[in-house]
Image (tube, rainbow, N blue to C red; front, side, top):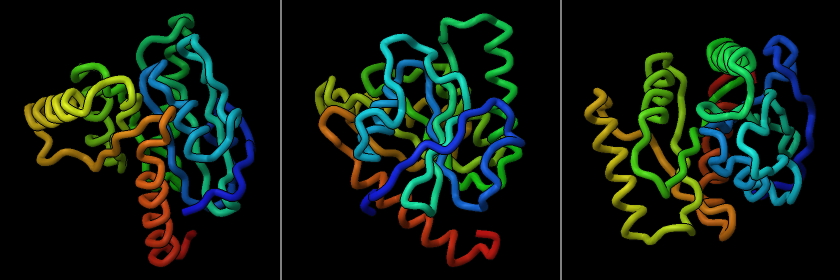
Length: 206
């Protein structure tokens, strides 16, 4: 898939105010400072579509971007560390879960994980929530340019082991990416393209 157009549509914290268009949506979420904005900018060929920041917790709203006029990329607030009040964090959690559990247009979520670190409990817990809630998702390992291929393989294997220990039958589909080197870009876009084709072919709502 080639991305020809990518435009910002709306930001809000109320799922009922999300776009009414019945187009497939792909949500991107991860711990704060996982490199989400950089990844979004990389796959959309934009330098400033998503705002990047050295300060964790920058994304605090549901952000919709219309891609090629036929699907939405949704940038969600990070979970885990964010320099915001406890009250704000509870609101984050509420509208994030509202989005995942009520948004019919969502066809897949991409859970971003920093490949530099060994398996983190918070990531495992979040993916367990996704699995228990029957929300389709893939794992996107980020920042692959920061460590060696050997370490990448080791850390992916550690995630597999930890997920199997948490009663997963198999590892979810995953991608290894680097926003700096555009690693994984073609694989991610090809996957989205394949899912879109299936969605438009098999679901009369879309």
